[in-house]
Image 1 (cartoon, one colour):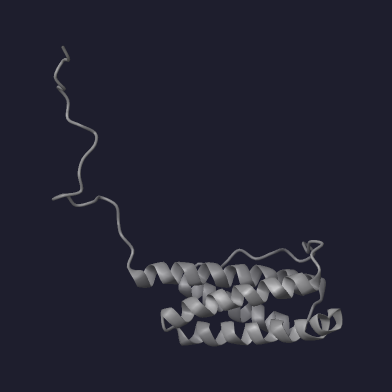
Image 2: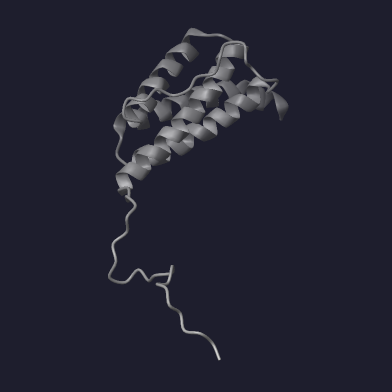
Length: 139
């Protein structure tokens, strides 16, 4: 009733075959994840710098850029252009930066990256301190 299949199946099982695509190690995956969190933190830092320039934020941005470049094998992150600040309130930016720094700290700790962990913890402290007076005033 049915004609037999004459061509090789496009579907194959994984048993006994090797894949043709490269696999990343756990460390490489963590590097990518950490670089992503730090790059996002850098973007928020650049947005804060644009809204309220400060030498401390400039220093933090430089340190974040160094870490992201290191984690990406020498490829520097894309940076925001000065004057591109959105209409996001500084408190919201500090909350976002605090959360991103926390995520980066978790990944940095899991891959035992001391430099990135220290930088992330410092940024958490900076953004938490920036929120304290505002958060206390709102309660």
